[in-house]
Amino acid sequence: MNKSIVFLFFSLTYCSFFAQNVTYAKVVIDTLTSESFAGRGAVNNGEKRAAKYIANEFEKQGLKSFNNSFFQEFNYPINTFPGKLNVAFDNTTLIAGKDYLVDASSGKIDGTFDLVWYNKENVPTKKELKKLSSRNFFDNKFIVIDDEGVAKENESFQLLKLNVFNAAGIVLIENKKLTKHLSSTYQEFGILRVKREHILRSYKTITLTIDQEFIRDFQSQNVIGYIEGSVHPDSFVVFSAHYDHLGKMGETVYFPGANDNASGVAMLLNLSAHYSKGKTPEKTLVFMAFGAEEAGIIGSKYFVENPLITLDKINFVFNMDLMGTGSEGAMIVNGKVYTNHYDKLVEINAQNKYLPIIKSRGKAANSDHYWFSEKGVPSFFMYTMGGIKAYHDIYDVSKTLPLTKFEDCFRLIRDFVDEL
Image (spheres, rainbow, N blue to C red):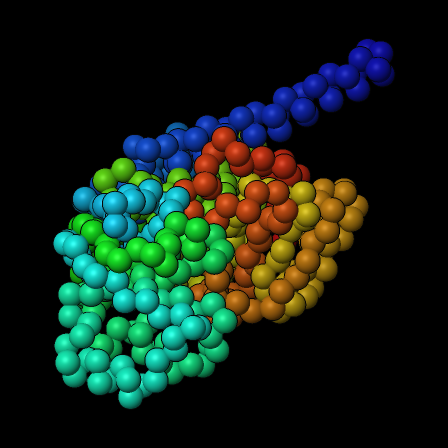
């Protein structure tokens, strides 16, 4: 056969293979970020639906399960906002997710309340606040806290934020983007975070409804499958990514979590598909999709404390989160801890020019790799950099996620693991 034809055939086959990976990744991300998955949180069974979807993908790919189930169940407490949600200042109604967030630890509340404002122009003393509190001044009022220009260590503002004076609720003014989080506890008062441009000093009242439910024993699950090694079945390499996100806030607003971390799940499923279709690996490859990462890296902690495989037989854990960009390279958490592994990753990248740069950080409890490395298991956490800035907000959607270096990240991870 003519060499140019052979080269063309190889090139088309190669490109088709990786184009198919990106196509599959987009299907996974579109699915996990769809409204029916409700932000992959506790409300409307979003997290459970995502877990079932991943388990079905594992089954279709032919992965094996431990103890006859892909699920490892566990429980944890979580504060949620499943129902009605309305906020208005005077007669101006705000838009949830865009103009304001309900703080993760807010309690339920319903009614109309007067506003009390504190900013750098009227910083109160502790004595003044205690005097007002003794007269029940803050009863049935919301305290608006604008701490711009106020020293961080100002004790009065710290006490106001803690609401030690028993107001009906507090409003925290945000100068930057609204960033949503989760909480395993709640307060007995309402807490809002409002963008500065959507609250005016002239406002006198707030009318709001926050439907809140604290679930003391929410059942979650890790989703785990494996491909048994042909030569060293008792030697393990783990790929991991968390599949949960921030769920819903009210009846209509949900947080899609495309980059965080539908993109990581897409990479996990691409890797499991790759290894399940190819030559059987020499070592056993385990694919772990963790729940409850956003609530405090709980799922991975549960696994480490209740391992389905012996931890000291794990050669390496490669955790993937925020894999949807990459125009500015990638960061490796624990790169400064496991320097030999990091140097190998950098060497592979330099040889193949996959990413513009691979940076390294030290130890950090910021994703599911952490509990493994705390037990002495060599672990990396990789996340991509550049591109979109959406994070923990309503704008982290599938259609704007570029997947700039998704294919090259796949190749880099594959090459690195193949050399372990």
